Image: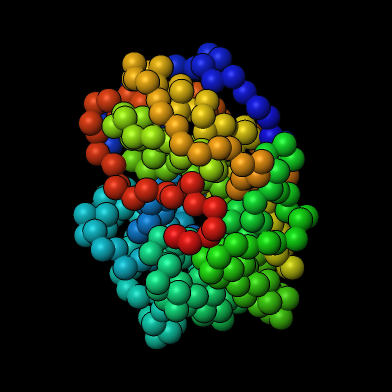
Length: 354
């Protein structure tokens, strides 16, 4: 299921997201379906790599959904937590935290038992020139986790990069298609999947793999990258001429609900937006909202990194927030000079070097 849309056609609220506190509350708010799922999920939830861009709000969402369901459980976030304020924030919202290096086998062995594990650890940006660490994080670490949590249910984040490029007119790559990774980052991510697949087959561990493409919120993501370029009058590279995006809260809710669909061998789900967004049209929409002329460079290729999320929609429902709402929120955020993570996605990269 993928569709082409006319930007500006959605009839959704145009209210601003006033600050990061409202934003994080929105990103952490569980859906009724997730609350129901948490009422049926047995046991604690351990989130590995909880200090990343998506981890904190996913932890809070699972905590809130569990409370809403009246289900007693520990929600535990594990990470290096380079930002100590994130620990305080998670603790304030009822999420336990454990700080440490997941590449340390002794630390992994010391982690508490948990029947449900959400795996979010990984390395992408900076992987070019640091290939050894990329493979250690993306391929070696999953084997450590599979050994430690062989009797748990594991939901593991992966990426649509494992597919490679597909025709813009194809509707995006489906889970049934053979992987065709471009570059060492994508290859290492396929390695991550193979480790989970191998140990699922050997040990009977129930696993579900989420191939994400792309999650966005106000402080990072493909839409923010485009908005910043338009706002600063920088030319837009059209080489990667189409993308699909998903609101981070929708991606987190779908991932948490998908734990119920883990299996051996692993289930695979594309977590992606349903709309084919053409980079030119998105940037022109930002130009309208900013009152700016948009400059472009290059020519749209006939293929792009696109994933078809139809299987996940049939299983978990369609994302709630559409692209034009996201675009308007991002435009408002940029115009007001609100904070960002300062981490470009490099969505325009076609050769796999990040």
